Length: 421
Image (tube, rainbow, N blue to C red; front, side, top):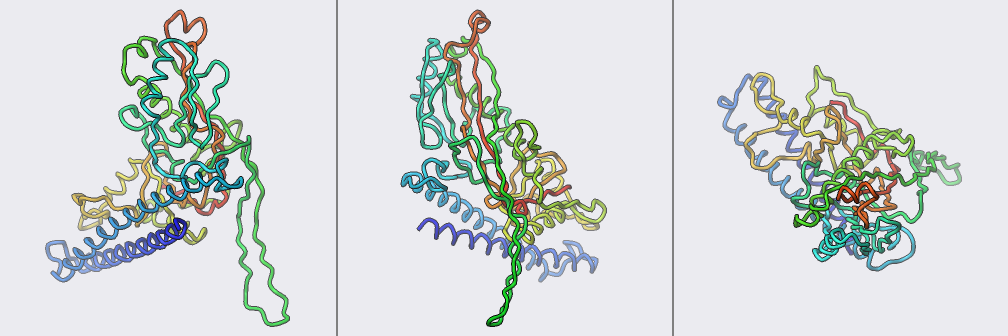
């Protein structure tokens, strides 16, 4: 049932995108014609001004409706994923072994308060502790001296502990699965089956030549460690949130960079923008606005991968420049009324802001189609059971680390387009 609802919601999203684009086109046509006649906002005919107001209100209404449908998509996908997880099944997409809970986006998971209290006491008393309940439906087994462990699953800590950290996690927008082996075999399609045609009875049928390449992605580790004074664990309530949150946030920042820019050498992932076969758009800085270049990138995905982009990934400074662009002559903001209560998506596509993408570069993509991320080990924050070695013991400090192991695949690279702004 949920799968049917998810399909219906996807059709609603496409319809809303088309209606928003049609309203935007009509607004552009009216403004262009008005500028050609030398009109300003004050001298524009009342009929034109009224129509522009109606179209603006219609866009705002459609955009609000699109947000609701997108949220319903996320909730339905979460419910479907959880149902699959509970039902178990054979090894595959819907099984306990391979499915990350819900394959959901932006689902904040926080271990129970009792778990944090156990961790606080263990760190204070310098004793070993094993915490169960992993992010993928299996227990986390402690090994070696690093016994005090919290697994935060696919999400980072939420709230005050996310200090001085980029809040966006690109992996939240990519279907993700647990990996029960060191590597995953996958197939990448670079050409479709396109020779189908009407055939007369008895005639030879045309041959299609789709192109697939078998590939293997190895789970790579992203990790770092730090230390904190023993007095922090003894005296500060909620230190686990602050220390653990900072460590997980640093892990996510490195993960974001790898998903975008990893070059596949050494222990790096092969990121989206280093994958062969993705689309590419360079803005004509003389004759083209940033918004127009972004639209070309969105259209590239639509016409080469035949899917609707579901994200535009932008650096906040680039979105600032998009919003600041003005029409020549009238000086009106191309993005619309800056005092509008709601910020619209770009060309009907949701914007994902992150400082982990280089300024001057944007990505238009349908990440649900383009990529998959496989977690061999979910993001995990660990505190050394005995504090550390001799140096740490004598200095009254405790070691901690955060790490994860993951693999990234891009089976449909055409669903990604890099846009140089």
